Length: 150
Image (cartoon, rainbow, N blue to C red; front, side, top):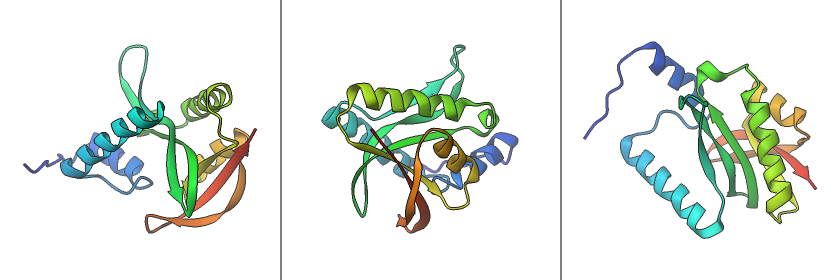
């Protein structure tokens, strides 16, 4: 089955968000992504959550997960739909995830990855106590790594 998205404002919004997440994914790749995330939860007891408003409107996804960027790391991850940008959601989500990490997870540090050109995400990480560590290549894309230690 092939999924075809209509050219609409919501599709343009998806493209704006997806440019920092590897682009719009096919149904097959999306299914593999969901299965991998469910497996992560089963193996580690933590992972990604879907985010919604109190009225059950989808906002995005966020969580903490294992990742390999040259070495094994634990990453904070968040992605919001375009309509939710600039409203403080990302900062609120990152603060909640850091609090959860501090209270429940034994890892000495947490990283945040951002595309080199994603200034908004970099600002959220910096504002949340993450410190720029270095540039890296992750899945063929130039990224920056920020780290927060206990």
